[in-house]
Length: 611
Image (cartoon, rainbow, N blue to C red):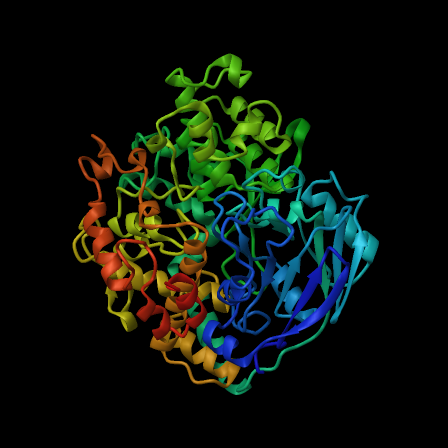
């Protein structure tokens, strides 16, 4: 199988056994790899009503056929399972060096079940796997864990993916961290890893998977590397990282502030330029990436040292969303999240919600254990620490906004989440394509499975007839957004960074050249559609219906100022058009039996429509 090792590593932590799981060629052709193939493997283990923290919930690490090749921006992997935060399908992707090292260790992924009796880590070297004691690692942060294992194993090229105290303490939005601050951030898969007493996965090796047409891949590599390196956005990302969007986004009304109730704020204090003026900032790239959008910030004073700098989502969540413009506190909160492994988006939204409830008197100082006033950067840092340790009010905040509203008796429409996953930092009022993508995304509110703001900011996918349009228009937008979801989901199958400027036609040519199988752009889009529907079927089996495809009022109510003044997406129009395009059943929220059969998902058709 060109482009693949052809096998996953199966790990049973109950028994301590490991074995090779051979991959079916049909599954690779139909799902390609990454999160899509992970969904195919996890599907048979899904049980209605299952506890996401139970030993039988699989945890899957997966790479794809692009991983390990010369194509730029492909050192990415997916981490998947049933989300401890949402109780439905969960996935997150990450970059760094770990994805390449996992592929070079001899596997296309790792399928982990069970729970170890005591803390362990998994060590994989050139196809050989061992489960080792990790008692000496428990309690260490992610950076410490990386260093201890590198010193202990002394393997050249070793890469480590691990959890910090967030995962150990089962914070519901704990994440999995690899290399230098590269994070599989959303859905709480670090808590799933922690529930298995699995502290880390360490991988190394020099196994190479061949490509079917090396000359073709060499030529395509040259083409796309030159295009990416010389592209204007690559140059700007290299200089300012994702924070380059802060002030532009504010002008468009696309950056939420004061817990989604404002979109006009002092953006100049939290831009990429402001970060460079306040600190010595250098760029950091994932393996094989010519862009280098990551930030490394040099701190001075008593806490002198280098830390990973905040990206856009993080800077907004701990910044304007909390009415906070103190860069020191934003940088520190981000560092704590990376060091101890919790999702910056869910943490920031939960903290902003706490401040909102405090202002309304629903959460008082006695219950919170401290004052929670808007703009208090010190309080934000303290709350992050409390969430990590699940101390005091941090115990509740670590459950996310849905649970916060339930526990505190707040209006549920004020909790900023979709299906339990906190809203990202692109405002649903700014782009109707984003609004419908949030409401229907396979893992909940997700700005990556359908980053439609990129389309309506003059983007396009000509092979799929997806073109820029009126960003406020609801009619005619949902079908385009659904096609774009398919397209973006496919990136997490290949795996390919979403900042890549490779065209869909080039992607099809590259995939064909790697695997030796013929793919057209439409074939690849069908893989994305198949993946979206299978993930939906998983969530349907876990209780999701059409009633869950909605946005909270706090994120859609029209504002009186800014770039979205008096604008609000028409969710009824968007949903009906989306369901019609998807061929999903309006009464139940399930993909129709005919659609599932059309996509070759016979078992899902049987399970969802057995009566």
